[in-house]
Image (cartoon, rainbow, N blue to C red; front, side, top):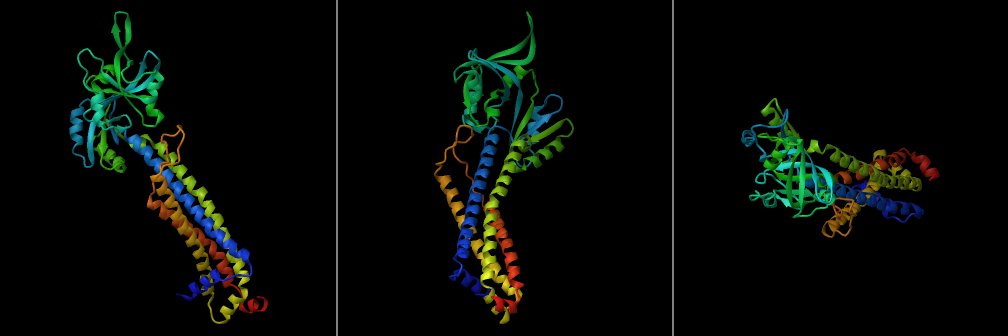
Length: 406
């Protein structure tokens, strides 16, 4: 054991004349621990919320969209065949997309109609998945109404349930004996989905791609092609490669671009919470600094004797830096253990229930060890900085004056 560590440990364990200094040291340990624990738990909840939102969005949206300039893509089959040659592409499916008006016996509302191929569409959300999509949007029998899948909130607005019928009116007009009339088609509600995101649940509906093409007047064209990739975080790179390969007349968008505002807001909130809760550690660091300053005043004679015996000024600095870091390391380790333990407990036993205003019913905890290491490192850095001024003051002491007045 080094001399500096030995003396720092003795100072921390020794009974002091001023018991108030010991109390400040103990409070500093618990202050650092409380701040670190709060940071670990809050950042884990924010990470969980971001992951949950991402999972819900990617359960409905393709990772990359390939769109055509001027109203759609004509040769969808050829484009899909070309997309198979790109590394990282798992699946592709054409889609038709447009605004429509839905009417039922209980109400009326606007919606976004998405025509999909049930065989190729990748969907994974509460109410529909790839398997159930084939069943709910199966080819209708002769004379039967085709199926439509509505968002939960949209169905509530129209006051319909599975088995009811709705009329879908398109902005495309057709010539009739009484003049121009909008295209109208009757559909049977075969399923409902719930993503927890109102912009989807309150305005999106699915039908077969051929039904949507007829209603929206697309003919042989499709609005675009949905692309699913192996690594969702490489969607931007893959999208750029696809755009460059297809050349002029095509453009791509990835899921991060389409939901940039949401994820930017989550990132900003996560950063803000980190900064705010770091203030708790900062307050504890001030306590560390104040306890060391008072200890330097109490140990003036001891410091002077050590310097008279040959202790260098750098050794004196290291003694008080080590003393403060022992407090900081102890508080940080206790805070990390408490925070990780609480996160693991909340993951296993989701006892905290959230109101219906949130898309999730319990706290979405996701413990990421990278965040834990950053929090621990930030805490130790703040504690280290708080020890520098008291340590410098101790090392600048004149040993003669210290012995005379200590």
